[in-house]
Image (cartoon, rainbow, N blue to C red; front, side, top):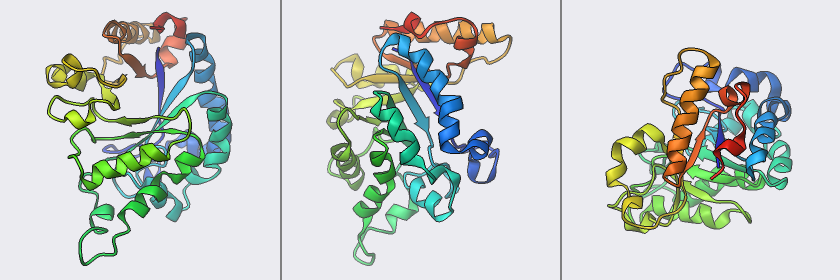
Length: 268
């Protein structure tokens, strides 16, 4: 079935506010943001079964990039994104909604690199757990950006395995993008992939020859021109093609909702 995506913070673009926190979240705070922005999506998704929300960059790019440890940076900066986070989100996850908090990659992250080696206090894994603790407390699943090439037995692989073991009942861990044929140790992982990237590299992906975890394909790079109905039609076509592959479509739902589509139209 379809999943909805909300991007909380920006990266690689000119941020709408300091640290890239979206303006309506700054104005509302989490409780009102959930009520006004998230709940209508949940209500719409419910006709297709268990709703799922992908919360991209939940604490925002405080460090200047889309980081794994953004919760720590946001706390140090006293951002609104860490205030009332678990308290606001826990009722949503306890109601049966899966919320996936999508974090940045560990690749080339200086805050983690400096915590390894003989001359540094090795509190690497402590920073990993501190980075995800607010999400665990909120009852969320977790997605790991650019993680499908983490080497076996590497610090990065150990980290995501540790986080997966920490998750609460019914919560899941997702790598990004989908596992490739080159990394068999990741075949079983659930995954999230931008759909254009998936379509470009699908012949190199493990699902073509092996059983893998769930494949979620995020549609964001389409023609957004024309009327709301025009965009909804394009989205509906892409979502239908993803369902034909027995994969899960994910993306914005506003155009579909305004154009009279129902989530059950995209139930698999």
